[in-house]
Amino acid sequence: MTKVPFLDLKSLNAPFMDDLKNAACSVVESGWYIRGHYCERFENAFAEYCGVKYAVGVGNGLDALSLMLRASMELGRLHEGDEILVPANTYIATVLAVSAVGLKPVLVEPAENSYDMNPKRLKDAYGARTRAILVVHLYGRLCAMDEICAFANEHDLLLFEDCAQAHGARMSDGRGAGTFGSAAAFSFYPTKNLGALGDAGMVLTNDADVANMVRALGNYGSERKYVNKYKGVNSRLDEMQAALLLAKLPHLDASNERRREIASRYCAEIKNPKVLLPEIPATPSEHVYHVFVIRLKNEESRNEMQKFLAARGIETLIHYPIPPHLQEAYVHEFSGEYPVAEAMAKMILSIPMSPVMTDDEVSEVIGAINEF
Image (cartoon, rainbow, N blue to C red; front, top):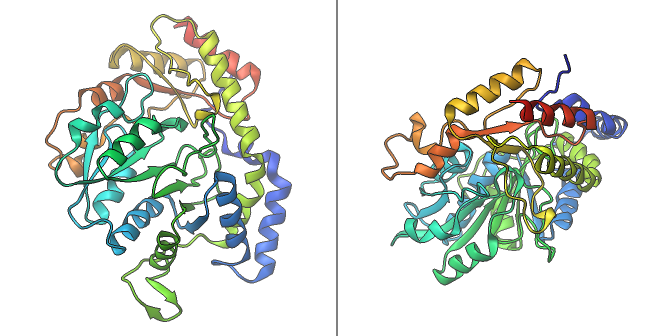
């Protein structure tokens, strides 16, 4: 029986093995392992790739989110207790970051056709204490940024981006993930479209004050050694991960293009009427397909499909089975109803998506889904 893994990280990194080994050896031989030459080079390279002025490497994606928000608080642009609009169907990290710095997350229902934050529902969540919007480019698809930016401007709100799944996603005019708001957070967790070989994260911004504040907060609150101006934390991108990411960055666009090729086949060749496919954006580059999500009519059908595919050696995952407002950690903090987010959690299924998938593996997945 053919085995189709959901994601094979060893195969994913194999094409870059020589470059990764050389990068790792260079770091070891340098004798400098935190915030050195490679960190600076990767920060500059990723900022240029995304189209922003400043990038600050941090320890991981969650730290990137929380430090981005904390920086705005230290600069007096946000204050404890302010409300931040976030998607109701995001990964828990988005909500955790808001809570961690003393802000209040307010959930916004997603659009059923794109899974991203529904701009038409922003007005439902907006209130007297709303001060910012934190969008999540979920599954690698850019949100409806023109509409969301217009709402933010109309109501004088700050705009932040969670780009943990959207490395390289761009609109037709060149604007990309990480360029729309006050600041943006990226994760380089190993499974991401641009993945490290450990934890790593980054904050992007065009605001020098935000960049300097994030850098200080992530370095124990220190701008100068042994002089601690803020109550900071230890969250710095280490030289090893920076060097490995720098080696992989030149291959990101080709990797994303292969993801789009696979997604195009899925959308064209999956014909099972029980399966609802994601809407294809008008500009292909708006979506980098961190994962490819299909939808069944209900939880029972979804679970049956998952078992059916597993029996044929095809691995699948659910992103995400429990919405934030139903997680035990937040069960007493959200009082509203979020039927769209709850319904999606019961119907969605992520099928294999990787730039190193073979055409035969893609055909195997398509065939099995059509057979169900």
